[in-house]
Image 1 (cartoon, helix red, strand yellow):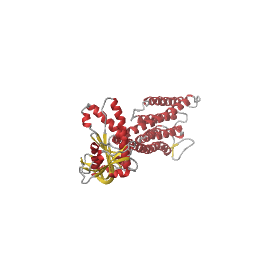
Image 2: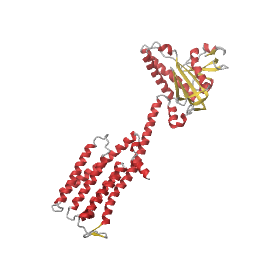
Image 3: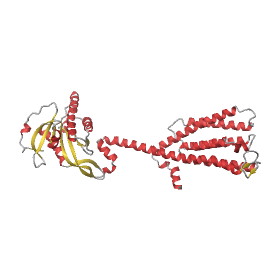
Image 4: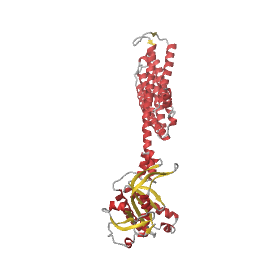
Length: 464
């Protein structure tokens, strides 16, 4: 139990900086609230003492009451000036304020002691003790367990010191039974008065502990959400939204390994970019690639695709991985056609600046892949491997020979033939494939397919 209490009291230094800052702001907010109450009560008390009927109290008592009210009000103004800068944190302030509040209240008890009823006014008038209890409870507004315990300790220290003075120095009849009217005091009743006033500080410590725990929990959860969004935004600059969600929502998925899945793979590459880059400054090349990739990646994400990686001046995108989507083949082909449309807009702007046009080739294939994290324990990436990927890359490269822009395999064509216009190029031999492969060219919707030279080539023709 003692260890738990120590953790709750002295846990501040182990908190993250952001959480500690939130807790400190709450402490200062609580200090401002207590100070408002202090200012109102001090001002009200001072006004009452200024308008008290002459002779109702002794001159010494009136002077002390006015001194307490004025001093309290001055202190409230000083604290208000100190706390105007909300970003400042004063750890010592709560202990100083508790010391000032309790001390001035006990000075007020001296005023009661010097009044007409003397010591009987001290222990039979509940106003000062009630106010003292109220300020003890308000110690909990600082969200500090130690502040509440300090308030309780100070009330008891002053209270028993005051009671010892009364018992030893004043001629008061001490009776064995409780006395509410007439001369005499019961020592136990006086002790109970001090103890119950001090207990409010214990209550404040309990309240502060619970409130502090709630604040820390809320702050931690809020920071966790904020950091998650920061990580999401940072990772989204390099990976697709689906991969980011997979990594952040399922941290265990970032281990090495893979699983068999069905995916649609898209490769897109800029034609003759190496030659083009020799005619440009390096900074211009980087600027052009950044603009090109920004446009193309947005199109991939828009159609539910996942950016797998950049390959120099090309990119590889996945559809249906890591999360399944409806009609991944249609999404991939639509992505390719929208890439071509976006490239036309870019080319018009490039020509207006006196730069060369860009041309791209796209290859799409669908089939089984192994998807997962591939690499080493120090550095790995989420990707897919398999013959499906290899054929998609071969189809992309084949565009150079066929003078086409978008080539798809038979599996993709079968899924999209009723949605997009296409042209069969015939079974073609592709390096790495023992048998000829059916290849289809996807056409923009406003193009009428016509037989071309490539569609008449014999299947024995082999392409890299």
